[in-house]
Length: 129
Image 1 (cartoon, rainbow, N blue to C red):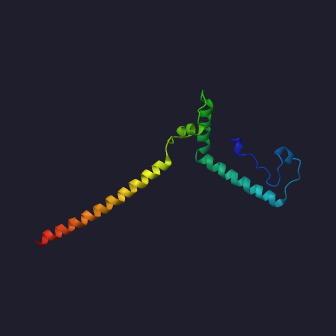
Image 2: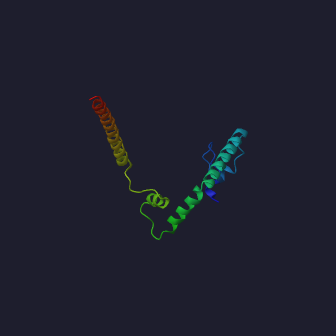
Image 3: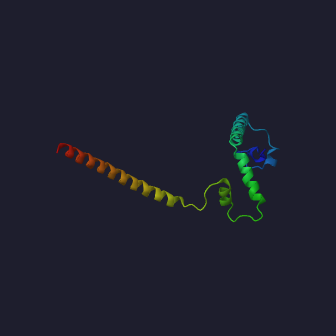
C-alpha cells in the first residue's frame, strides 16, 4: 500500500492548508462531484500502476537507494541503472549517428538497384548476341 497515492488533493479554490480546510464549509455540489471524478481517476491510475508492477518496482528501487551505505552522487543515474536503463548515453549523438546510417543505407540501396539494372541489361545483351 502506497499512502502517497491516496492523499486527497488540495482545494483548487483556496490556498488553505489541509488542516485549515477542515474548518471550512463543505464544497458546493459541483465541486464535490469533480472531487469524486478526480478520486476515481486517481484510484484507476493507482490500480493501473499496481497491475503493471510499477508500484512494486519503484518501491524496490527506492528501498535499494535507501539501503545504500553511501548515497550516490546522482540518484537519477542510480535509479536508471537499477531499472536496467543505460547511463551516460548521449541521445543527440545516437540520433546523429542513426541519421547518418539511414543516409548510407539509402545510398547503398540505390547502388544495389543501379547495379541490378546494369546486370539485367548485360544479361539481355548477352542473350541477344
